[in-house]
Image 1 (cartoon, protein in one colour):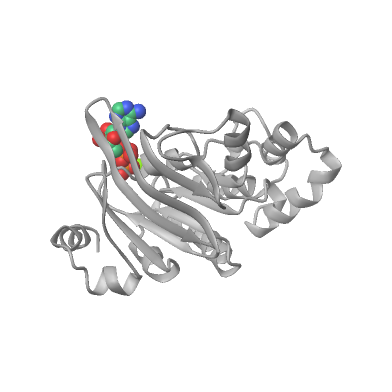
Image 2 (spheres, helix red, strand yellow; image 1 turned 90 degrees about the vertical axis):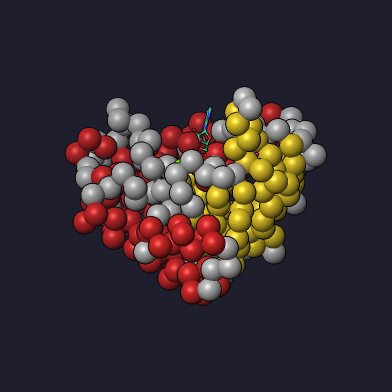
Length: 247
Ligand code: ADP
Ligand code: MG
């Protein structure tokens, strides 16, 4: 089953063509890793998928519903319903510093779905337990390590019961000794068949956990394939050059 289909998506900032005819699909249960050098358009692509940026032309379908079709966006209400089905985890966690861990998790369901605390308590505990942080439920974000903050951000994304999780370099802001705990949580989500799109520089993670790799270069998907294809038999010279700098 198709979760996301992107077809010939284009986006420019001024005369800088940042996304150039991007096309790919994400099926249910896929873990898609997007790799490529800095500035190749990876974050802009994810941001277009959750409507943090508006694309200029092309299609994005989420579970068959258009987020943008032939360059045209539907109503605000339709957009909101579509992006509610997606969770996003950012490089810099983006936790609300004045709210406890529990309040961070409960904010979106409360505001967006008008859920009551009683409905949320159990899910909140379940997801914090899943990321190994149940005992920090009443902590303030400032008392958490970077790895713990990112695990809270993942639990928070899960609170909306998304059909897909998008990650933008979730471990790039972490000290090396803290990346493992975040990658382990992501690995366990993959084991539970969570559909995920992960922009990452963690090539071992991409190789081991993803079933599909997209290599982006200068706004294009230059090469797409299984980890075996991309890491062992890259076709494009640019892919080989990129991999030789990161492996
Ligand atoms: P990546 O995530 O692969 O490093 P980005 O998507 O962040 O790449 O950026 C792609 C290109 O688009 C970069 O050249 C960047 O400077 C440019 N860019 C990103 N966001 C904006 C913006 N809001 N305004 C102008 N240029 C931008
Ligand atoms: Mg980026």
